[in-house]
Length: 285
Image (cartoon, rainbow, N blue to C red; front, side):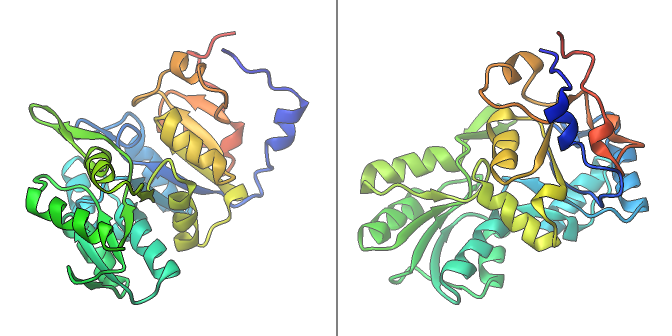
C-alpha cells in the first residue's frame, strides 16, 4: 500500500520553518499495557526540550488530568497534567459554550464531575438542562433509571464518547456507548457524543493549546477514531502501528493518513519538520 509521493503530496509538506504542534492519543501511541511504547519517552523529551506545543488526548473520562499524569508516571512516561485533554474536559467545554452556568445530572466518575463542575455547572437531579453520561467502573441501575426519566422530562442527552467497551482484567466491560444505547432505547432520544471520532474534541483541544489545525499533527493508532477525527478537524494525521490499526486495516478505509509509521519513535529528530518522515517499511507497494 505504498503511497506515491506525487506533486500533490509534496505541496502538502510544509517547510521546516513552520512551528508545529502535536496532538497525540495516549493508549497504543505512548503507552501499551502500562508500558511505554518504543520511542515514546524520547519523543516526549524532544517535545518538552524544544518547547514544542503538544497535548495528549484520551476518550477516558474516568480520571482527572492529574490522576492520569500520576498513572502515566508509574509507567515511566512524564506528561504534566496541563498537557492532558480528556473527553470529560471536552464535554465540559462544550457545555460551557452551549449553555454557560447551566445544570446537569452527571453519570460518571471524578474526571467528569470535576470537569463539569469547574466549567461552572451545578450538578443536580432536579430538572437539569442536560443529562451527561460518561464512563464509570460501576454503572448504577438507579442512576441510569434516573437519567432515563430526566431525559423523558426534557433534559438534553450528552455523552463523553461512543466507545462501547473498555478494558478489564477479565476481558472487557461495558463503556459509555453501550449504556447510551440502553438509555436511547428507553427514551427514543439519541445522545450527542463529544469525544473521538467527533472532531469537536480535536477542535476544543486545539483551542485549549492555542494552535491552528493546519500547523498541527494528529498522532493516533486507530483509523476509525484518531485519523478520522484528525482529518475532519483539518490536521495532518499520522497512524502509528504500535496500537490497534495495522497496515491492512488502514487500506480498507476510503481515507488515508498523511503518514503511517511504526511508532512515535520515528518522529524523534524530526519534530521540527514531521512531514519529512517517510512511511514505515511495512507499507508495501
